[in-house]
Length: 397
Image 1: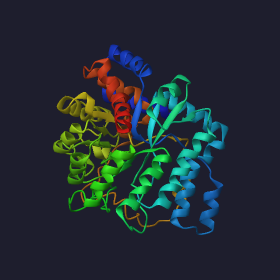
Image 2: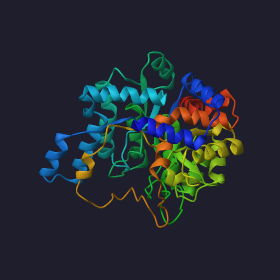
Image 3: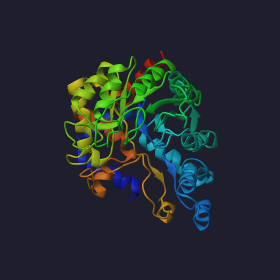
Image 4: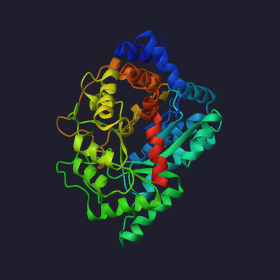
């Protein structure tokens, strides 16, 4: 049994669909525009001579991190076999476009540009698979030509290291918009100048400067993303925005105590902006049974409580082309400040089968799961892509 078959069987076991629901869901998925609200394109794995050389030279953490990103997202696809596997994984998923994370957990402009270069350079290197997309009206044509599109987001709002004035600081939103960035995290897990992150011990909300950031994002055409923001920061971002706000890859607080979950009041505020919450495919966030069935439970809850127009799927996972081994060679170091991954009590273990059931290549089974819950084809098409596309259009209007 291949790794793909193992993951598919785990997904089927979690859902246990009827033959009718399975066939209908797979056909609907194939004929729909599928837009992952936040994820990673499939990454290259295998031997990277550059990383071995840098480790031998005692390179810094940041040098190694950049080499890892650049290989996985760009130069690793020099290998013809990797390019072949890349296409296979995309085709298995049935995904047409990914809101691709192209920015590190930072507001630092130099840091953001480094990652942006790796994740966008692959579009030119593997032009048999990808086409560049800067505007939503380009996406239908890319699909018709049998290509895949990357729509770009960053894990932070770019800010200069020296803030002379708010107006000058906000200038970089337009600069990164011109780099085709269309969505930005208001915060990552920690506090920044904009507001509190979701893993902070306090919940101080959006700053005065943060409100200026939201207004400028509205003006420029960038979606405010509160997936990693605190509850109050998320709520206040939605209250002050004149355009859609999203939590691109989160879960419903109704079912999860994880700090990445969003409470009903936050989801209701996001709904009022005509935005959505994207449900992510991480067992430790999902909780419940921590598998594909529980993932569908979160989507179902948001759709039935707040409406099918206000839920999407932002997997936050992606898939590796081959086995990732070279990152195991990295020397141990402290986590970077912004990440703050696991506050006390936040860690949740998951089995391999639970992870397998949620695999990115199981995307067609996500659609099958929604068929099982009785949603119409039109409603499902909104959840698996239409809502993301609508928000992209509304933000630029």
